[in-house]
Every structure is written in C-alpha cells, then in structure tokens.
Picture 1: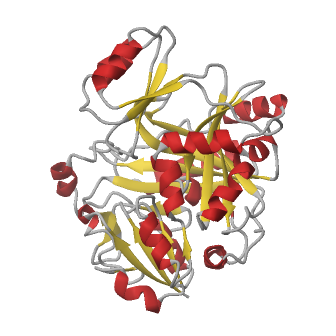
Picture 2 (picture 1 turned 120 degrees about the horizontal axis):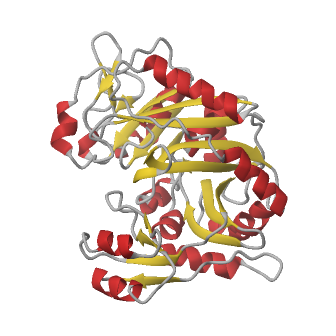
Length: 422
C-alpha cells in the first residue's frame, strides 16, 4: 500500500518508519518547519514538501495530531482518512465543549461526574479566584499549548499562583483536584459508525523525573493493556459514539478519568493518537498492522486481535529537553550520535535523521529522541525489558529516561478492580 502521513509537529514520524519497515510505501509531511531535517538520509518514509500533490497516489491518509480537522474532513471526500476530523479538534482543544458533550451523553444509569471547574481569560482573574480557595486546584491551558504546563496545586494554591503569575494572559480553566482516586486513560477506536472491539487502558507518568518530580512533559512513560467492556468503557466512552459518528471521525478516542470508590470523574478527551499510547498499542496488534489502519480509515473493521500482554513505553530524551523551545541549543545537537542500535525492534525514534552509515542521529529539532517499547505478560518483566534496552542502546549518560514507570501500576489496577471499575 501507499500511505500518506500528515503531521503537525512530527509526533508520528516513528509510526511512519514502522509502517515503512512493514513493507509499505510511506510519504511523510510535517507542518512545523523546525522538523525539516527529520528523516533525511532515509528513503522510506519519503519526506515530501507538500501533501496536496500526493492524494491521488495513496490508498489512505493518517493524521497524527489535532488542529487539522477541517483539512481531514475535506480529504476524506477523496481518500480514506484515519486520525483527524473537525469534531476531534473540537472535543480536545476546547475542554468546555468536551465537558459539555460528556454531561449531555450521561443518563441516570450511565453518568460520569465532572469536578468543579471555572474558565478564565486573564491570569489576574484566575489568581483572584484562587486566593479565596482552600482546596487545591489544577491549571489547564486551553488550545493544546505545548509550552504551557498543566500545573497541580500542592498543599493549597500558593505554588500554583506563583506559576500563573509568570504566564501571559491566555484562556484557561481551573479545576478542583480530586483526591484519593486513581487516574486512568481508556481508549477506543472508532470506525466512523461504532467503536471496534476490544478497548484498552493506559496508566502513564507525565513528569520528567523519578518520583513524579520535575516538569510535566505530557508522558515520560506508560503501561497499556487490552480490555473488553467494563464500567469505565460503558460509562465514559460508549455514550459519545453518536457524536463521533455525526462528525465522521475514524480513529482513536481516549477519555481520561479519575476513578474513586463511588465516582468516575471526567478530565478530558484525547481524540487523536496518544503518545506513547499508539506506540504501546502498535506492539500489541496481532496480524497485519498496516491493514489495521487501512481498514480503520475505510470503516470496514469491527474488531481486532491484540496480544493479552502488557505493553510499556519509556520516553528517551536529551538536554535541553523538555525545554524544546530552546531552538538554538537543539540545533547544536544536529548530527550527534547518541544510540548504538543493532535492530529497530521496540525502538521508536522521533527527532532523528540518518547519517552516511545509515545510523540514526539527532536531527536538532526538539531533542525528544523517541521511546522504547516492550511487552510481557507481567508488568515487572515489561519494565525490565524496556530499561535494559534503553541502557544497552544509549551511548551517553545524558540520554534521559525514568526508571520508575511501572511503580504503583499493579496496585492501582488492583484498586480499580476492587472498586468494580475494571
């Protein structure tokens, strides 16, 4: 097959590489010019300067991120598309719309709660509100701003106020923290009409350093496993099927919740590939992986076979990451070889180009190197595999990765089971 992968910020170059390694011809286009060097030195995927001229040459199109939903809806009239739609942009980028959809989808038998939240357009108004609150809140910027952290108040809101006062004005929400719960992501793949079976759950650690300290990067590592219908799927995912069908969406939808003993609190939707959710799930797919994406784009898939193993992804980066806005320093890393890789099994590379020896080197865009993925029937063994692989391929101590991604996951799963959610 011929596949076109349209990327906003280079999130899925590594997926393009994996599909190419499966024997498919892949064309890759990235919108952000910062990633112009990514992929140089490798013929497949072929990096192309324009996506428009390739539509009549490919069997289907993959989008890796929100913010191009209108383009995806137009392309879908000509070529099958997986991974984007205007409805996907709407429910992810506007948290208020996502919350409203979840509220309206609920019934007396099928309802997810939403903790108290309030929208603001100026930092001063948000700070004024927080100074009258005793319970901790979470700051969440609207519009998927990568350079603005989600910030959780600790022991009150003094630290949160200090952080907010360092920011320019922007739309954001403040949401009351939910204490004593377990955060879990639940994903389903939508074929344009219905969710396919089965579903999957993910638990991730988002902060840079062990012990959940340091900057919130989005994901430093995660553990994923396959599930059938359970209370989280039934309450938080299935009710939005009609909304997705009306919007013509094909692709993954993740609902992020905090579960307590008696309530399920909705946090947000991720209506796109998650990172590192897609890496984990790809390694669990049984059978023809490119065909899975093609059938999803076409809408003629109702179920898919997956491994029953756990899959663990471990993020690898290099300083100055996560300060990837430090563009000059990132550019200085161009051409640096930080890995010695004999084979690409379980290795997903992001900010890379290929040198004259066909070895991956840093492309100099954001210093997010990629991730290692390993699977096993036991979480502990999946963790050992990923850590060993990361250590084996890393040539420098400066390669950054956490060593505690698996800590607490089994206990959290047991807690969710005891409460009856999974």
